[in-house]
Length: 340
Image (cartoon, rainbow, N blue to C red):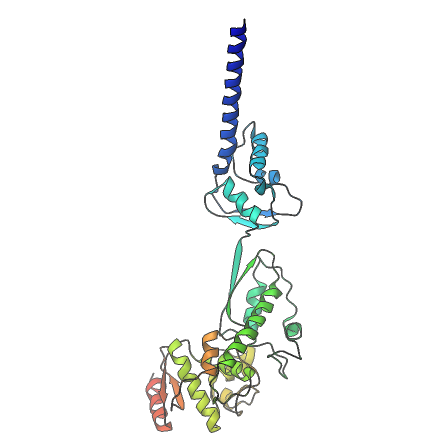
């Protein structure tokens, strides 16, 4: 009798151990359970949502004991129950553990927007207005100056109340639902910091009086060339002209002054038209930048290459021919412009 009871006890114990081992294996196996992600899986976790609700959004084959196993899994890995609100996008093969690891750490999907040098604030404004992963809270473009600029301390104070050129060209990362205005605020702060740093490293004999003047010149350099090796030389040409009291005579300023009326063809009439920005008609620098600039053009403006060049002309391949004398320049114009 005792033997039978002992055998029954042993069998029961072994069954219990075996059952526990099976359950343990099933529960721990959830961590490596593969999700069948065929197309981007987007999970937007809102405040108050539970881990069980998140689990139900996942492409997994449910089992009869699915809820029980998942609850036990959360007890074994309590950190996964502490989910963070946010926007999460999964595009490749993932395990259940991978998904809950990211969500519990709040590692939201990162998006980016590249605000490119050489473009204007109007072009940036249009670009940001079309980013559907941002909260669209941009004020009217004419209000951006008052929104971003502190009149008492800003490097960007100008009589035209223009924000042009006062934002740093760069790639900005953000998470879903971030403010579109916050991107411009970050670009403004980035330019403030970058310009301050570069102005501190300027050559002391450059013909620029303020960081804002450096920003204006950098924007012109940005529009004049996309050839990295030429930026310093072009900066040197403009510095020479400013020191000699010569007009800058640069087409990009003329085009900026024409504004939306420019049809892509610059004419002699445009060069004769007196606007605030036409450097064929005004002395010195225009009143504001004419585009957004990146760090290389900023550095060229404050550290121009030492050169005797006074003139340059486009060669038609993106580069320029530089000249010291007017006679050399006229020959270069005949070679690269008139004979094309």
